[in-house]
Image (cartoon, rainbow, N blue to C red; front, side, top):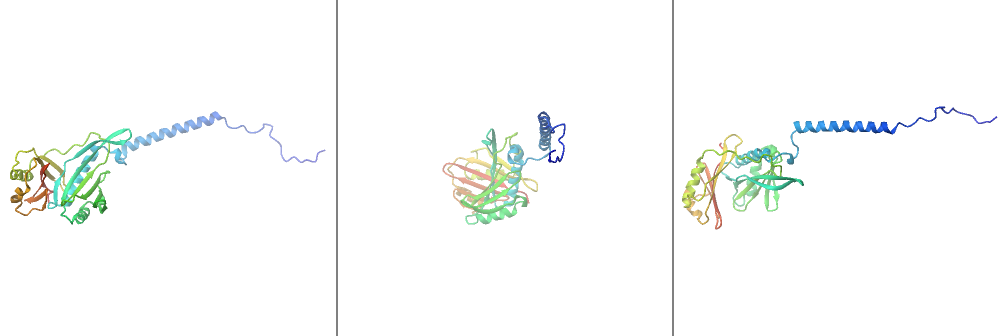
Length: 285
């Protein structure tokens, strides 16, 4: 008789067979389909209900009103005595939103008086007057002080001196889908800026050189800031404007000359190759 001790009995049925591979594949397939359906539902809900989260999702027609309001905020911050001119909207096409999609960018400019030596102080004062949510600040740049701010909806604001008694503020959308495109504000009846421009053109003996262009932006408290601009033949001297300025221009750094008449600021750039005039009325109040 053997002395070995048996500690248990092997099952007569043998080892438990592994789960069929086919069942595991079916389970994985069902889980994958369920996950895909859930992901599609979440994506559809997000597209329907959630605002875009990156610039490339907002088209130019959506960004246009933000740009126009930002120009109005800059005009208000500058005040009537420092605001020189609104630039027209410039749309540049041909940029790339993605490697496979074309886009365009919208830019608008605001020129503000900043006599030489005061540029940083002017930019700092502008930054303080802008909305808190813009997080505006002034710091050193490659060519002098720079203002940077965020007007919202991925619209950037930058400001730099131009070395001729002005700072140029630029509102820029960056490259984004065109959508239905930028639509400028409809034209409005002429105001005192038109009469001031006409007087300046007559003083320069250029009364019929070009049809004036009206540029506007909405002021934060209502109303419009307005600039009327005209390109003229080069050649005349800005000294002819001295009588309109009352011999007290606010800026006299050739070829740039500016003065105020009533509520209007008149800006002239008269060079040998190009010349233009602008008359601007700031935001009311």
